[in-house]
Length: 143
Image (cartoon, rainbow, N blue to C red):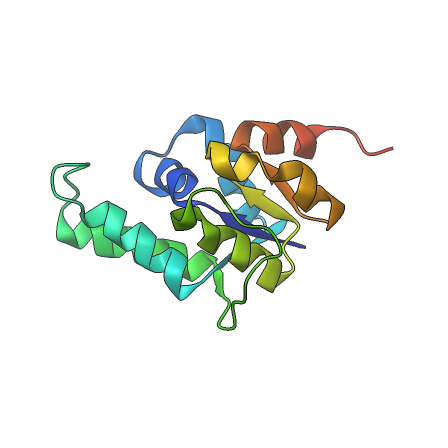
C-alpha cells in the first residue's frame, strides 16, 4: 500500500466539494489501496482554509466534521524533516517535506509549483501528479 500525500486543494475537492473527478482517489483510500498521510502542518492548513471567512462559508460544525473525517482516514506522521528540494512557494513546502518524511510514493496536487518538481522527485521515487493523472496511471493495465 503506497503512502500518499494530498495537498489542501485536492482535500477540498475530496471532502468539501465531493468532486467526481477525484472520486477514484477517494475510492482507493476507502478500499485500502493507498494510505494517505498527514502532518500537524498539513492539518493546520486544511483547517485554516476551511475556516477562512467568506471563502467557502463552511459552518464551524461542518469544518470540524470535515477535518475529523480526513484525520480518520489519514495516518499522522509526527517526525517531518526537510525535503531535498525547495518549492518556489514556501507555503507548499510542507507537502514535499511530509512526502519525503513518510517515504510516500505519491504527492497528489493541482499546485503548479509542486508539479514543477515532479521530474526531480521522480528520481527519488516520489510521483507528483494531478488527481486526473493519478487516476489515469492507476487505471492503466500493469505490464
